[in-house]
Image (tube, rainbow, N blue to C red; front, side, top):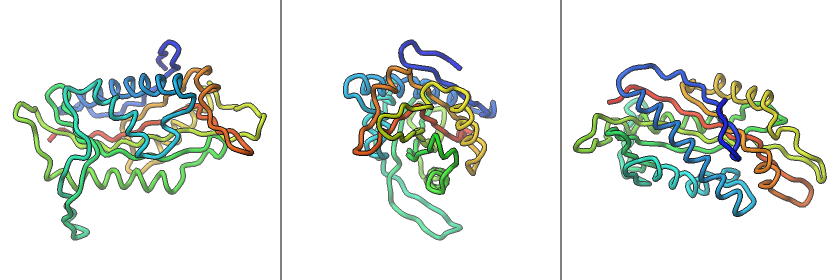
Amino acid sequence: MKTIRSKGKYRILDEIPRANGQMVAKDFLESLIKSFIDHSCHYMNLVGETPFAFRERQLNSVFAPAISKVANAFLMELPTNRQNTKQGYNNYGWIDYWAFYRNVDFYLELKHSYISYRGRSVTDKTSHRWGKANEQTKDCAANLQVSYDSRGYMALPIQVIPIYEARQVPEDAEGIENEESLIELHDLIHRSLNPKPNWSCLWIPHRDLSNMAFHEYEDRNEFYPGVIIVSRVAEMK
């Protein structure tokens, strides 16, 4: 567990094989997560809510500047063809992000879902979206391009999974900085998804941020004591 002053702690589970180009992917993902934490904290301090608590489209508002800070260049909604001979389709579509980092082209398919702190189970929606992200990166891989000075490319599925805790007003949240319980949820996600991620990260925001940036509803408050980000890194092409 690594500490970032006033921003909280993060924990990485890294099972990426040490093969062609995959160490670059490891460095890219950790740099991206630290940038994501920086931009999320800035938003939380300024607005008083969590930017990752919404949906995938709103998540892009934090994810795009995070990538921009890390990558030499990046582009959103890159046109591509998706081919799946098994299912018999060849469709025109888009991949969420292209990023050029340390002379490697990264193509990212971003998904978003939730896990309940109190429910402590992986939902069907989370599993489905993870499977979809992996399927989409695989389907477009044959049509991806490399930059003129690139060492190769990687297509990465990335899923952002906020941990939420709903509490009746005026109850306090139990999950804030509860490292043991949050790590259990991280481990649960990492071992339960199919295909199994080989890289994941848990960010536990600082107590002051979590207590400030919660979401208020008529009968309850929703707190976000942690965020889990998962990916699956294959060999560079």
